[in-house]
Image (tube, rainbow over all chains, first blue to last red; front, side):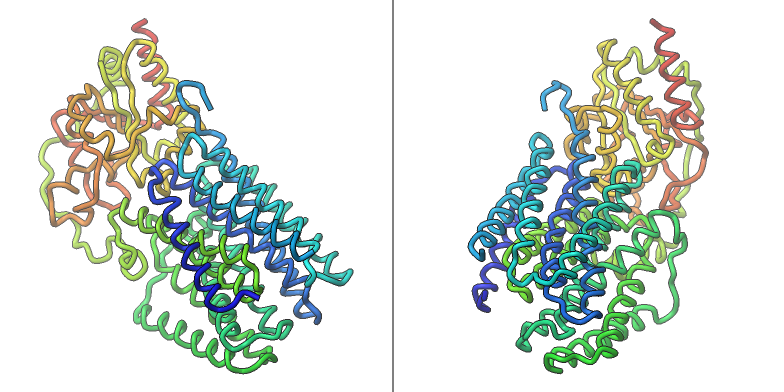
Length: 96
Length: 460
């Protein structure tokens, strides 16, 4: 169990990390980066799996099932489009 | 088993953060998404071992759900055209928001023993997730052209506020109603939250959508983080909040690049209050033939190309790159100048140019290139309009006044490739088109670029 204040610390540190990590991003990467961060919150898939795995009543299962579908769409779709965009960024020197 | 799961979630969190960091630089960006991808795979696989996941049907549904959602997203994601990328991001983001809301609903349906604080956090997560879900769907529909009108009516903001108030009130009641929440109450609550997302997004115009999508992206991150707290899952908490913070910063950066404070985007409407730009335009538009324009470019030392969304619509970026290579062979320095809002969201134009094969190191953004227009022999404006309108610098009355623009007008010669004579997205006349050093090359972007290429080839 993550205790209340420990959770608060995690939230605070994660917030600063997120802010710092992309604070110097060039404009050319805004769209791919937004897409990339969109992929990362696809981790919600893990949450939906636990929620569905834990479900007992039929109604809970239905909601959980829909949530898993949506979350998988978020994760997979986010990955595919981000990867496609970033794949195209090339330097004129031919290096990767 | 708990230990393995925790190690895996920890590794996933590290991979996400390092991956995101790498995505912030064009050199390492590709590697970044792959690393983050592995983080996701590790976290997902190990969750099958989670002690709370049990029951044959539950496992079956999980695998089926991943198959359906993942399969559909894979298929659409591989096929979508680069020009349609912004709305696809909106769609996938909305799905994440919906999933987060779903977790909250399942938890509130009594599958967990929750304290009232956690129950309140679950409620909060449902509201935020549901708003991100329905709002993103509207954003998708607007960019896809399924909804073309921005719905506005009297008392709109008061009604929206009322809906939000009712949602929050119901949420608070639910937070304190114990483990067994009334199903009908929960349904009404969810519907209200979804309705608020729709109502909030409907009046926002297409030009502001990128900022809105970015905001919903941040909101989904936040909702996911809150769900992490409900489910006692650190991977969700960290990844969700990191995205929430990064997304908030990204939203601010985009809004700043567009010179539109976030509050303006959400609560006022572009062009609504402007009385229109009444200032007199002096001069006339002067036409030029492609052959003459070709000569002008072929014998220039330095050419700066200013592409806009119009270029992408005409699918002219491949021709423009061919033109660039031709000029480079003749020893002409060619640079691309990208306005932050070129394309449909910041960075979108770079993606479109990258697709055509233009290397990113001859592409410059506004701050880097603006001082260089003075030394450029030719500036070519293709499919861009408002972003090169000098009125934004000179006329405080104009609705676009204060927006940072590319100083294309300072080049010795300006060639504007344009389909017709109309005004830009904002409806403001572009004084650049009437300037003495500007020549208009009318026609479809792709056709005009082809003509330029052949005229330069003729020079030999």
